[in-house]
Amino acid sequence: MYGESAFLFQDLSDEIRKKILGLEREVSYQAGDYLFRENEAARNFYILNEGRIRLSVGGKRLLAYVAGTVGDIIGWSSLVENTTYTASAECLAPTKVLCIEKQQLDQILREDPVSAMNFFKRLAALVGRRLVRSYRAMLSLQGSREPQAEG
Image (cartoon, rainbow, N blue to C red; front, side, top):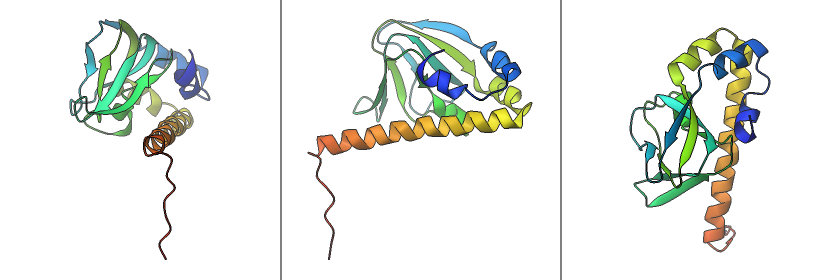
């Protein structure tokens, strides 16, 4: 494992990590295919194995993130009790992902609360990193204007 997925699965017991990795199934997509669309039922999360995926909200109007590094996590909405995906995931090139079904993952994590806590702490850190990158991107589009203090 690489990148975000390696980080996400650190600090899990060996037994739990092996069980989770046993759930993975590789799925291939062509450029222009969607893994999922915004507001569809969030049932799986994905680990990028090959290719590039654009995550966007509001149709294609607002780019949220481009996953292009092996190990990038896509579809984390399914892991945080969202019933639907908060973005659409469109393949920009031929793409292979490892798909993990959320309900099966939940069953495995219930077996080891310490591993589950570590998994979700790391997921929160990944989401936080993306949020910071989004803030920085918004600031660069605004010309890095600093907020003005009122007074």
